[in-house]
Image (tube, rainbow, N blue to C red; front, side, top):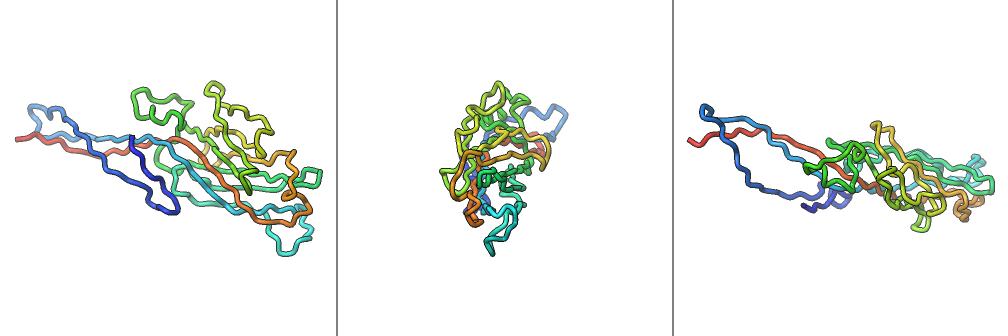
Length: 240
């Protein structure tokens, strides 16, 4: 197994290494001087897409313009982040609770923008073996963490049951935020999303209607496995 550094804002190219293998070719045949073949290399690895974004907690939900010059909640269109799985859009809004607070609600769209296939990160090594994967192991993405403002207001993934495909201990109230479905099974390019919403019982002052709208950070981390293959034509020549 090879460990390489992934792409980041500090390393746009990511890590690389050169691997060498000895191979023994079969005979080109008694009457042949050369033989053309396709050499195929398959890579299987686990990866993470990490994103931080500034958003607006818009407590002026009825547009009363009580706070002059304050921010407004606007949907976010993103490009690729250099990873095979891209966060393409973040649509969000504020929902009234009826008790004087807002609940931030997010729809996070993701898409496979690479040349390979997304797979279950817990079984990525099998994709490069004769064992292979089952159909259920493809297109499986985990939202590992979603943090809003601070580490006190977050959602963390607690693993899943392979038999049901559902998250373990996913009942509302375990974290300050609930995100579903997780794991996410990708089905349509650009149309797959996970929703995250602040739990209804959270009544912090920063989400009060008496609080002026303000900007803060959200942090996301998606974990997944990935596999892709590359082929190259090679000519085997008989030694004269």
